[in-house]
Image (cartoon, rainbow, N blue to C red; front, top):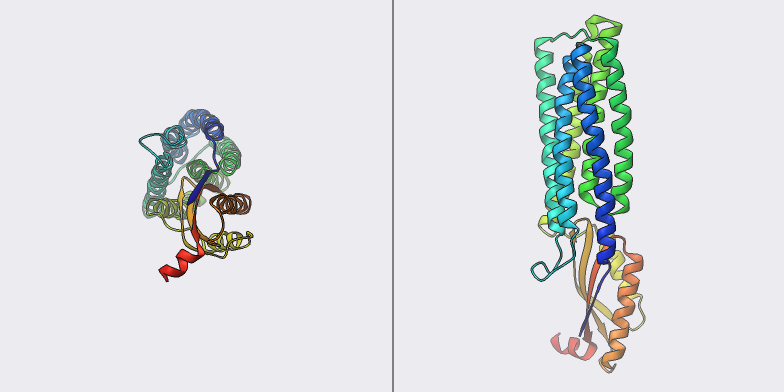
Length: 308
């Protein structure tokens, strides 16, 4: 005997995808405007660092496109050919964003190290300083907005894209420091390169964290021990459950899917066993965060003892 309960309805999937699409489109518009702003201000303001930052911002448009595809495909409900849904597509999109962040970190780090080695000098104007400050403000605001939506709809790919927005803000911080330093004292121009080098390490760490999480999903790694303990405790607290075993949990698109066996009195009727399974499901749905789907197998106590 077994019972299965899906937690995410088709309607909620559509609403989540719509929210993710909206925040990503806002990000794409902001990114497009910033590319133009940085490039024009870099040319007119004589800042090579700002021009390079504009080139870096182009990568944001790529990740925005990846996120849109991931949300559209990954949030589709299960169908005849994909019985467990399409969440792996969203996981794959998260991996693509993570790789884009790795490329960004390497680009900034290598460029910064090369500028330090060559003692490259820039003599930017106030226009470049203003453009860098505007970029930081917009991208940081975009980061917080995207993180808020990503957490609300439980989307790893949207969260990953939020960090890509922040990486752009941090690279603009490096530009701001370099431009400000050069404006205050020309001999401080190297600040830009050192700041960019530090920022590149931070971005690389975030990228590796994203890739590690996506890899965990690809290989069906179990969630943290705290989640497993909460599932076991919740199951055993349901009246009529004698014991639980064969618990399996995996994560798809940031949501947990699980199955477990519960042992009940073998003298109970099928209906009574079914009601206990339903009570277990209800408890799990209420107590375990980010739970998408639950399958509960009901084993009679007599059968369990024979197997031993």
